[in-house]
Length: 345
Ligand code: DOR
Ligand code: ZN
Image (cartoon, rainbow, N blue to C red):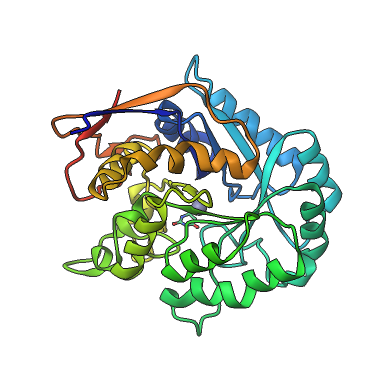
């Protein structure tokens, strides 16, 4: 029985760090276990220009715990006013590693996102030329499309047309939640990658809604039926290079979660590696964990793998604090609903 595994240090290819007090409170949770993370740009106001990204990067670096070597990989928030030259310059200087596409209105702070996909075509074409990946929040926003169908409809109506009209564009389907997305990713060439969150490997929609509503399990895209969760588990543990970890760890204070209209987001940064080890072990795939957390992402982004390692040891159940405290109030840590036996040393 395996009781210890050592992996190259993992990276998180989709992370929300916020700003100010929240940034300082949540950053250590990620920097403790992860070497790098793709930082989401949906601040208020969003990180739209290279100057915005440079300023945000500086604030992240100054919030790091003393001695930490964590590296934030910055992104720009795509708007219909985005200047392709600014994007290309930010890429050429090494400042940004991706551009993020939010359909307008799809999720938290996405109001400045894209409504008319034709208007961002010049930027997408430039990105294809220079090899800069597009990270996509893949949900349509039409009120007449059922929320549980929005990802599948987005693939047909938006993503596949973008792929066809912008050949060569590297695209990450982010936080995929359906077997439709798994199948689509598998049907495409190596210019398409897909991230999977920790929580979508663990919960289905029953966990949110059966036996009382669980605001801390509410995120976007919302968790789907069990058959979809199983498809995600199969993808994550398959060892296929196109699938890699993007936690979408998205902290909100409890005050903002526990409202009549609460925010979307699961805060998984503190216990993600323990949860993943438990899940991969359950599926007999511990040997695939390193690919998912530490190898496939760098390969997609054309970055070196980390030389440092982390070790996980199996033993008595480990506990994580139920909350991270911030000056604005507590942020609840994601509760997977089962014991965690894998401890990060
Ligand atoms: O659950 C989510 N929370 N999904 C998103 O797409 C955004 C994120 C956030 O920023 O809170
Ligand atoms: Zn996100």
